[in-house]
Image 1: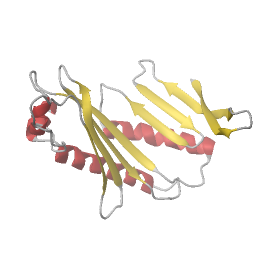
Image 2: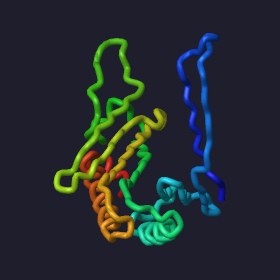
Image 3: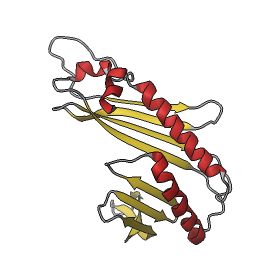
Length: 202
């Protein structure tokens, strides 16, 4: 276990001597726990709780019972009056087949910017980001695709889904929302990749 600290640094306009005025402060922000293999990280913070899982991954359904129990313990200690945000985030590192180059990305991913074609120009990186809102639930998604490595070519596919509704933290709806966020993530994942890329996960 280790403590988390919050640092606050403020820089004001220059004083009469011509030097900027700096104010800084720090405060206790929470605690962090890690499993023995450091694949699982839990943070209990003053403003919320988060659970992080590194590969090898299991599944969302496997983590949900653990998350329920940890949230139960967190609410006993922190006693939050209301919950204002729930979020899930999935970061996938996708290695494309050997020999693939940037100009081949459109064969695997649907969200790509057009590359300029001209003599003497060669794309060496790209970043595509889009924000989506789901009709009916109002849940939002933040999706980005970028280059993680050029040789071999690897993509970083980052999907974050969030619910911004305020509700009683003891309500059952919190877990219904989490399942909805997971379903939204799955919809985006399969809808953003061509079959040639989805086959790499099978």
